[in-house]
Image 1 (spheres, one colour):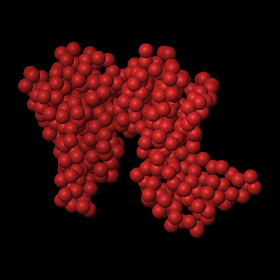
Image 2 (tube, rainbow, N blue to C red):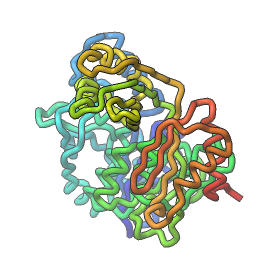
Image 3 (tube, rainbow, N blue to C red):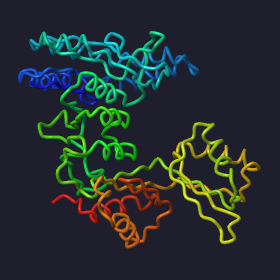
Image 4 (cartoon, one colour):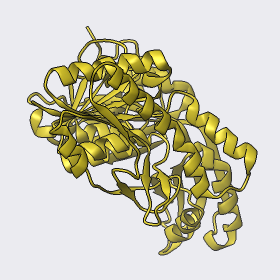
Amino acid sequence: MARIVMKFGGTSVADIGRIHNAAKRVQREVEAGNEVAVVVSAMAGVTNQLVAYVDETSKIYDAREYDTIVASGEQVTAGLMALRLQEMGISARSWLGWQIPVKTNDVHGKARIQDIQADEIIRRFGEGQVAVMAGFQGVSPMNRITTLGRGGSDTSAVALAAALKADRCDIYTDVDGVYTTDPRIVPKARKIEKISHEEMLEMASLGAKVLQTRSVEIAMNHGVRLQVLSSFEDKPGTMVVDEEEIVEQQVVSGIAYSRDEAKITLVKVADKPGVAAAIFGPLTDNSINVDMIVQSVSPDGERTDMTFTVARTDLERAVSVLKQNHDKIGYESLLSDGEVVKISVIGVGMRSHAGVAQTMFRTLAEKGINIQVISTSEIKISTLVSEEYAELAMRSLHTAYGLDAG
């Protein structure tokens, strides 16, 4: 007997028919003798509609009331799922975040889970009952409903799996697993059988949309085994596990990309202590995150060009902040480019294999693709290239690292 958390995303419970289909998957696990907790998202499109209602009612709204409204989508799905399971002869009940409780901080709209008290759910497992939990929501220290931010149901499911000490957390979605890269761009992309938490975290943070970043982070910290699989097809998915579980480790496991990138270059900044703080301090104060950074010092050693990336949606605001601080920073000119893409190769095998970067740089050079910025970590190499070369770069790198299917 295993203890399993099953999470169904919005497309998996988009209508009553799909809720019935998801319930059959739950039934299969129950009949196999497993203890089951189910976590559900709102039905597809419902959260967007609820957000639209808020915007239509109040342009400057109370975030606590916003959470009360948008959390109701998951409440409906949880109730419908519990009803359907009962109709199938399965003992089940719905649980809202405040009933368990899922305790969070009080940052409404993007709360973080602090504790889940799962004792009562575990007790009811002993009675053969299935717990159906509304994802995406919790309760603040002030006893108000909170929400965890978009994609928060993944986080709810993994956190619940950690609290229950579950054997596995199955994430059911509209794709059948994690692929070596986006198959819509690279037709030869193939499904990965097993991937480490660390690699999945990098892929999620660098643009892969299969799993929400925070959920992978919780899974890694608590050793939760994840499985990503399709709600619509009966075939194995991708297991996200501790690195030790993977016997044969690929040098490069996957290639991620992000179009949400923009590049800023400050030309001829004085090369002296404090200049970096003068540049990045005001950006931080305005909640603008900086990612890749490269500095090139002039031959006389007195001036430097500082290039860095921000989210494309933050570009206009970042440029405005830097212009306001021109005199303090002391740059000669400011250049910006919103038509760039970040492409990253990821693999824990990089730790023990040389030549991964050389392969990347050589492959891009052979295709005539100029690298604008480079950043590295222990298990990834990211490059910034012109947006027009994104697909060519991804396909070429996918082939160069031996990731092509067949």
